[in-house]
Length: 120
Image (tube, rainbow, N blue to C red; front, side, top):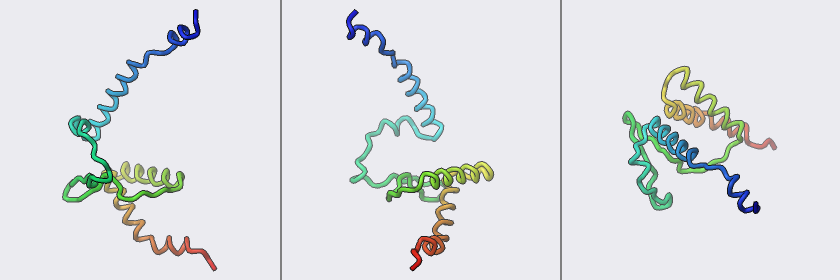
């Protein structure tokens, strides 16, 4: 038996896995309130399109950040943990928890700036 024939015979069929992945993705999108129609719409170029916005309970929210920041991985994990903890303790939607944490960070900005300012 040639090496090419052996290689072809040993390649696993991934068709079922791909189908399962597609079904799981559709279920997850449904859980998050996204319609199938939205996912099929052509995506606009981020440079030419305006940021997507949604209005919920009279509050304007942005889906996309207009800025890019990098953070220490441990700090990002701590933020995610705190958001989950507050959400599960209060059952307040996560977007509201994150918004309040952002406001708290803004209020703490002078203290953070003082902490990060090099001592002379």
